[in-house]
Each structure stands twice: as structure tokens, then as C-alpha cells.
Length: 115
Length: 117
Image (cartoon, rainbow over all chains, first blue to last red; front, side, top):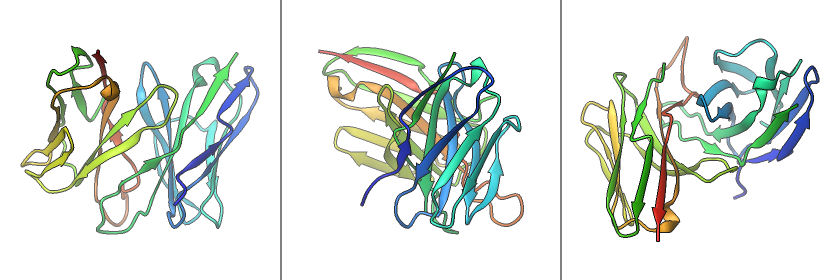
């Protein structure tokens, strides 16, 4: 079974631009969560999508948004990029079944550099 | 404020030594996961522990979930250079209904382990 895939793997943008990152979950997984990882803050939760609806949201500004499609693939968008948005963006998928431990499987990440 | 505190933050040891990494919280978790991450890659799941007091072994790695499900430890026996990496613990809550936090993992800051040959 193929793992979580993320595209692109690397991105370089300039301040003020916007960016869209893509995530394809493991087949059969309906939940997709996004995390930002930086050396200073570690892994911070951005949001989670399940059945095309945002179910949970972390403490990030509205410039960070996402969506999920009917095939469970998800995209994350960051508008008006700032230098501090430079980070590794990780996507994780899980079954999200009630009563089952929410084990999340991560993709390789997208390394975003904002100049 | 981190919900999960990991210690130590850095660990540098020689091949063959034993080590323990701790993950502590004041919050009760329904499950706790340990991941290992290589530079520039996503975290790779090592184990999920669910039951208080549970002990799981993965070759030279032993994982323990505290009786109260607030803390966990990872013990590595006879460390090898291939064990080098960032070890992360992450907890999840099983809260159903409105305001469910299911789908969100709370991560510790990680323990950077370096094993020298």
C-alpha cells in the first residue's frame, strides 16, 4: 500500500506570494492533518480535514487555509507569505474511526523557503 | 506551552550504550505514539501505545505507557549509529461528539539522538 505523498517536495517563494501544497493520503484513509515544523517551535498542528470538512484547527492566522476533495486528497494554501512561514509542512493521514487510536502516518513533507 | 514535555532535548552517546527518552504531560491521553524523523523527511511511526501500563518491544527499542496514561518512555538497548535521529512523542485524545479533538496530535519538542561509532 502506497504511503502518504506530498507535492512538491521543495518550494522557494518570495514574501507576499501565495503557495499551494498538495497531499494524497494512504488509500482508505479519510482524515488528513497538516502540521508546520520549525526548529524553534517543533511540530505545530494547523488543521484537520475529514469527509471534506475542516474538523479541527490550530492557532494559525487566516492566511493558512486548506480543503479536502471527495477522494480525500487535500491541499493547503498560504497567502501573503511571510519570512516566518519558512518551514517543513507535513501532512498526515489516518483512518479516524471512532473507538480506534488515531494513528497518523506522515508524508515526506514540503520544504517551503520564503525569501 | 507544550502539552508534552520530552527529555532530554539532546543525547550524544557511543555505540553500544543504553539510553532512555522521557515524555511527560499533565494531560491524559487515549493513545501515545512515538516517531523517528530523519533530516528533511517526515516522521516515521515506531509504535502506538494505548493501554495504561502497556509495554511494547520493537527489537532493541522498548516503549512504556504510564499507568495513568500521562507519560511514556522509550528505552534503547545497545544503541547503534543507525538509531541516530529525532525521536518524537505525540499524544492524541479520544473525545467524541462536539468539540472533538480527534484528528489532532500533540507533539513534544523531540529528542535529538546521535550515536557515534
